[in-house]
Image (cartoon, rainbow, N blue to C red; front, side, top):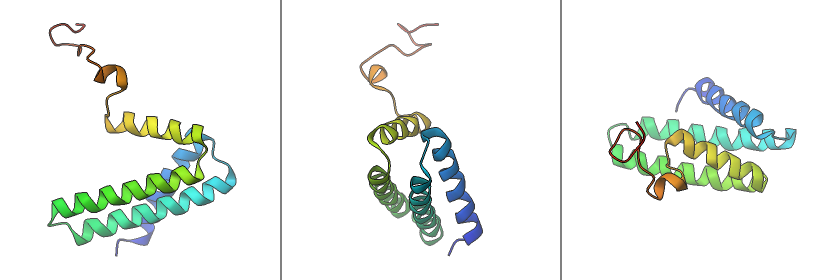
Amino acid sequence: MPPADKVEARAKALTDNMRQALGLTPQQVIKVNQINLNSVRGVETARLRYRTNLRKLNGVVEDIGSARMSALKDVLSADQFTRYQRKREEKMGVPNTSAAQGNPVPGLPGGEQ
């Protein structure tokens, strides 16, 4: 089992960031914190259990992430969820739709210098 204090601190940090960025209500904060706590605990447990099997670890982490997003969708308003998803994609480096449509990349031929 991962250290409980580490799991709780990580979940609280995630929840605090979401509370500030999305303007969560007190009821949402409680629900989101529980979702984050379960997700962080699951990921940290998987890291310990599958540390020698990266493929399995990645699959488990992906499943936990999908379940977390589904749970968050049930708690957040449509606007909050959309904003959360957009910020999450930016953080993870997912290209936005205009970049995916073939805009030139800066620094490459045809792109801005």
